[in-house]
Length: 322
Image (cartoon, rainbow, N blue to C red; front, side, top):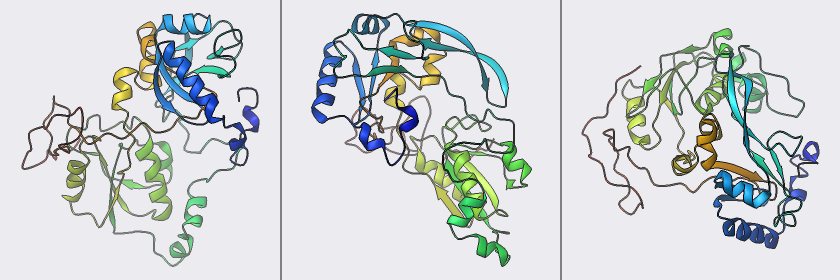
């Protein structure tokens, strides 16, 4: 899979799937070597382990390198990358000559990722086919015909409950109207969208209704109900709620996001997650809504949810804005 990266497309990806027996054999050997298995799919296995476990299993050392990066707001900075000095491809650990060479093609160490890094209002050009904003999205949703009759969402308030919203130059350049971010209970940092999901979703909304009055609500994903209540308090005409969130808390406690742990250098090596070419990452199992016990929240988790303690219910959520 590493050698044929340019050949991997939607119509060919199934050709890179591994046989189930090979997947099970790879998982068994990784567990025997002491790695924690986080995710399994036909293309990759997602793992966590210590530096010594990587060294013993694959006969290589893992080094920390400082490299220049561009972070949020086009800010130039330096970040720490994990790498193996034995290969020319950054972040690649080879498996030849190890106990894994017949089941694992290679190990890819994740690199830090920074969202909203581009200062331009124009989307970057990509060689692969994709929907471009706003025209392709509005055309695909059949909104252009409505726009030509004067229906653009003017006078309609839309509240979006999601991961947050970043005031990207794209929105400024197009003159979209957005209110300050409203924080749901236990949500913080109103000017940041750590995953970028909410920001991307709002671009889809504006593509279909460019003249709406947009109100982003940042939720703490252990308390989606409280964020929805916060969104409904001003009385918007429509709500856009992201309910199918991906639960990263368990992995974060063990390994964190690749960027968050990787930036900590050698301290993050214990929990680094490797991507194996035989399997594709899939979503971590969703856990029931929980509660950050350092904060009071308004939602009570399911009583049968493992690993969570019931928190004090409040009669009214914290509706304080940014």
